[in-house]
Image (cartoon, rainbow over all chains, first blue to last red):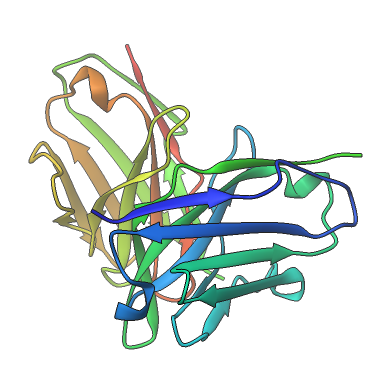
Length: 122
Length: 106
C-alpha cells in the first residue's frame, strides 16, 4: 500500500520560505510516476502547485512557478517543496500525492498524504 | 487556462436518493477528467478518472459520464458516508480543479 506523509514547520513568517517534505513508503519513487504537491486554503478548493519525476523533471503551476521549487531525493524515497516569499495567502493545508502520468502528460492523483497545515503569520 | 465550473455549489439530497453533480470545462478536455471526494479533515480520495472509470475500491453506486466540456458524477443511492465535498479535475493540460460541490443531507 502506497503511503505518503508530509512534514515541516506549521508556522512560517511572511516573506520567508515555506519548506515541506513528503516521505513515501510502500512504493519506490525511482520506479516511476510523478509526485506532486497540492494545497487547500482553509474552507476553499484545491490548487495544484507542481509535480516532479524521479529524474528531476518538473512541472509547475504557471501562477506559482516563480516562487516554487520541487526536488526529489530517491535515496530517501522522498520529495520536497519550497515556496518562497510567502504571504498570508499561502496559508493552507499542503498535500503531497502520487501523480499518474502518461507520455509526459500529467493526469490525476491516486494516493494522497493526510495533509499538513501551514500558517503564514508573524 | 481551462476553467472548471461545478454546479450546484451545494446540493441537498435525502439518503437513498440519487445525486447528480455537474462539472463544466471552459474548453474541451476530451475525457481527461477525474472526480474526488473529500470529507472534513481528510485528504481527497480519487473516485473516477477518464471521465467514467471507477478507481480501485470505489462502489458501483458512483458513476461518471460526459466528454468534451460537460461532465456528470452520479451517486445512485446515497449512503450516509457519501455526504462530502466533491471536486472535478481536468488533466487535458495542467491539472486544475473545480471549486467543489458540497453534498449535504436533506
